[in-house]
Length: 191
Image: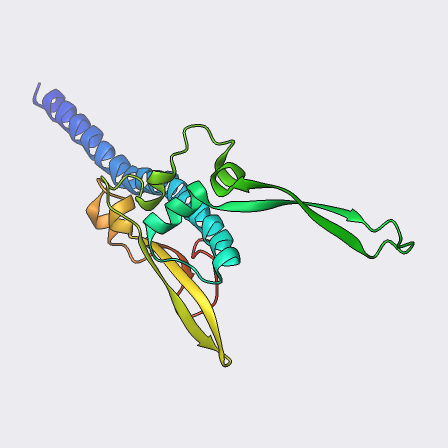
């Protein structure tokens, strides 16, 4: 009888230990899956900002560091719709004629086909309970030329809010950063 009790106890202990081993392995796997899912949404937000910033720079020769300005520009800013055709007098087909045929708002051009898209949300870090992205813009000197630059940062603590705090501290888990204030780039650190 004692032997049966010992065997059952050992079986229960083995099952409990197996469960703990399984959880030890699955915790970082679940964290990485959720981290990647959240990062995708944050990256899409950063890409949207990049598109608007590039159009803003084209029209204003600089980037903006203010989300209100960027959002207002997206709603009211207009970009030309251009028709380009070959010059009928050019037999080599190397010259073209460009005509502006209309203007369209930045919002319609970039986000018109995205259902449920709200430009006001572009300033917030997804999953952060309302924390804002950090955005900075300015100019740097590159070879004697003042070059406009900007950066947008989604802190990992914000977009990974509510996940395992110890795993967030891992140095391999990074803030998501678009652009740079030191180099003239509009790339993200995920690219």
